[in-house]
Structures are given as structure tokens and as C-alpha cells.
Length: 254
Ligand code: MG
Image 1: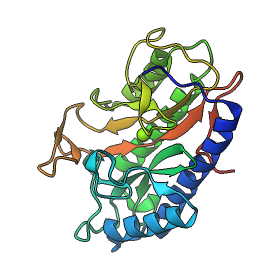
Image 2 (image 1 turned 135 degrees about the horizontal axis):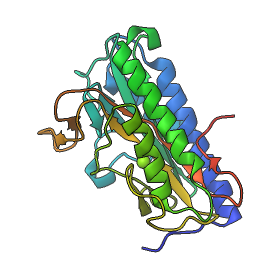
Image 3 (image 1 turned 45 degrees about the vertical axis):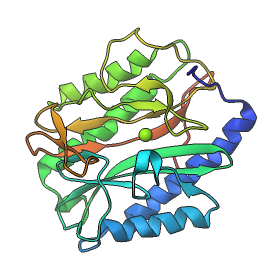
């Protein structure tokens, strides 16, 4: 599939989907507390997104059962919300949520500290800070003339410098009419490699970072990806528009 270049009209529609996605993630963060189940947050998220005339992008995608993905502690991505999966103070939880409206998707992720940032262990605090910063290091490279590998390399360089790992099996992606479009946007790679970036491309940049090894495996639910040693995982994501100038973070709230 060719990389789609969005028209100004398409970009303005997609901005709305991205804003709903960002508001949904903000809303999820606002209701996280020790003792709440991921099922309860997921249900509220679904209602939030529908109340804004959108639908949750992940619901039913490849058969995924939730409105959003909830990945706790050693879970990297694709955790399934459930009543028995109850958050406790000191946990970290990545919530990956997308919204589809008027033909376009938005997609974003954040790893939250349950009980507040001071409630999580110091190693978790450092992992969250490094992963979020690596997202912005990647976004800085999302400019016309650069290649996808420049983004990948910036993320990898930052993460490796902090002593963490980037599993190579999971990527960011182009996004638009489909949640997952070309190109793949890996979290590791070489500068100057991969597709060239041009204005009008929209991509989801999403470092998925592990604490002690780049090896992962998938649980018997066939969805949840976990760190192979049981170390912590973090995940931050924004949907980004390549413009003639600076990259525009479409899922950033003003
Ligand atoms: Mg994504």
C-alpha cells in the first residue's frame, strides 16, 4: 500500500478524531485510582468516545475485545481489560486508545502511574521519563526530507543511552482512513534508511520500551505481550502530521 498523503480537508477531519483520542486518554487518566478495574475504565472510555460521535478504533480490530488496551507493569502492549484486572497503588499501566470519526482515526498512548508518580518505584519513574522523552526525540525527526529511519534511530539512541531496550517486533505506523497504514515506524533503526517523509503524511510514533531485555513473549490469551524477564514496560504514543515546517502533534491537547 502506498503511503497516503492527506489533503487539508482530510487533515482537518483527522484533527477531530485525534482530539477525541487525546481527550479520551486524558479522561482515562483522570479516573485511574487504586482499586479500579481495567474493565471499568474501558467501559467508561467506550462511553466517552461514543458520546463524542466517534467509535473506539481498537474494538474488534483483528478481533480485539476491548475499547482500549491496558498493559500493566511487565505487560508491554495489547493487554485486555477485565474485571479481575484491578489496579493497585505503585502499578504502572499503559492505556492505548484510538477514536474513529468521519472516516479517520487518531491514536495515542500513555503509561500512567497508579496512585500518583510518587507512588511508583524509582526504576518505574525513570523508565516512564525515558520512554516519554524518546517519543519527543523521535517526533523532532519527523520533518520533510528525513527518512523513517531517522525517527527510529533517535528513539533507539535515547532509550539505549538510558540502559533500556526496544523490542524489534512492534512498530509505530502510518495512520488515516485505516488505523494501521504504511509506513511501519520502527523504534530502532539506522539514520538515512526507510521511506522518505513528506508533508501531509500522518504517522503514529510509539516507543514501546522494556526494562531488562528486548525479548518478549505473548501470553496464552493470544494478545498480551510481556517482557520476557518480568521487567517493567512503558509505552508513549502520539499521532503526528508531517508539515513543511515543524511536526504537528495531532493528539496533543491545547
Ligand atoms: Mg498505534
